[in-house]
Image (tube, rainbow, N blue to C red; front, top):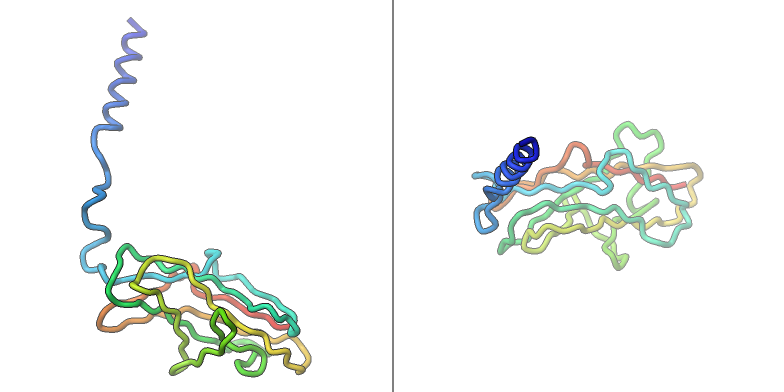
Length: 172
């Protein structure tokens, strides 16, 4: 009798846990009103990572950025970032200590204090912000903060995660 109760309990549990599908693979993804809302955040997922490099380094400094999207669109979504020196005693200076560059080392120009990172067709992916150290001869350690910032236009909005929106570059 005890074996029958256990068997019935196990079969009931199996039926209960497998009776319905939680996700509809052909149905809508995301919440209503957020179809054109995306997020960007640095990897690894924190706000404390610092790339500490020698001023003589020739390899590009890399900061991976994850773009979160559930859709493929007919437009490219752009995450934006800025360089922050507020509260930094000895700030690194763009054009003197480092340049923001593409993956080939070509300098990228800012527009109104913002740099952009494009995600074709708004597809989810990981891309990279690249910085090139310029071997400035000014002595001492210099530092800069790189912050992802919200980008909004008439087609979409790219938000940021408060847990992963900033990185630091330290040039020694």
